[in-house]
Image (cartoon, rainbow, N blue to C red; front, side, top):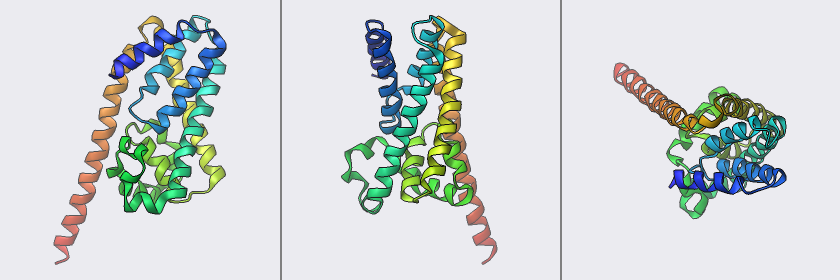
Length: 210
């Protein structure tokens, strides 16, 4: 289904004038932050290929996708800030949250208590937890302007890497999807391992104190 969606977007982009292509990439970058199943990263890399072909500009697509990513992040931040109590009490009340792995919610909150806005700064590089991070930032009521700035830095670095790779590999831009998949699995495995280790340490200390 994801591959079909990607193909449909590529076909659509190939029929559009440059101005409309920018709009498509803006919407993709925004929606990917709100509905995680959308393969936004791969399509942003496709933007690098289009830039290499001089169909669109490298800097404009980078800025637009970055701004869209920040707006998407802050949209989830607002949801967390506005409906935080209801989300924690009954997360299924908001249909949008069905797409978000809320099992990481408490863990991300612990990360933010320990590392603060550093988690927001790293959010784009933490595949599988981005929406949870933005939601948790809202739940935690992190300071607004520092949150926006950290989100912007994270987004422009990550999108710059994706668009740059798309530019370099050119017509082989779809291969980036394979590497993104591997990267995402590594990140999720690392998070799971981190949780297991933390639980193990806590259990061992509890047993030792008895």
